[in-house]
Image (cartoon, rainbow, N blue to C red):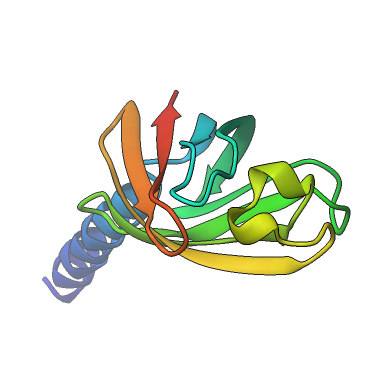
Length: 138
């Protein structure tokens, strides 16, 4: 009897643990990411970046360009089991014609990104210097 009770408790713990792991890994895998920034009010030109992001255990990481070089962008953050995500986009400015207020090449920047994911797609925005949109697909 004692052994059967221990086995049942162990199985329940594995099931509960399995649910948490399944929720955390729901979005795991490779995602195609597109960042689109329209022309800004001050005349900065529109641009688009396409890159791949990996999600592992609900944590997203993707990069465009060469780490630490002008034009580089990194996108990081955690996707919650319900699909909500607060991501962090950070990078280094590239060509001034594409940057708000003609920011000098090589200036670090950081923008919070609010996003939401479903099983096969997602969308997000940053709204700091101009409204830019992210789309995610797998």
